[in-house]
Amino acid sequence: MSHVKENISHFPCDYVIKIEGRNRREFEPKVCEIITHHAGKLTPHQITSKRKGKMLSMTIRIVATSRAQINAINNDLTSCPVVDFIL
Image (tube, rainbow, N blue to C red):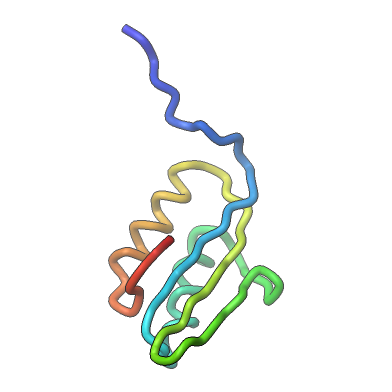
């Protein structure tokens, strides 16, 4: 029986999360709340936002500590009603 490695990345590592949703007042705070819950406090230099018509995209850079952390962030963002896409 062989063991399959779960992690192909070395942790901790820089990790970029791209999120899109409708340009609503609650979008940015909710996304930041979710990521802060898993990755700690965010600083303004970690966040880039772009508005295009009715859509808003955010790029957030974190230091990821494990595959489990990344999966938890993605699961919470996926289940968030104000998030349309995660890239």
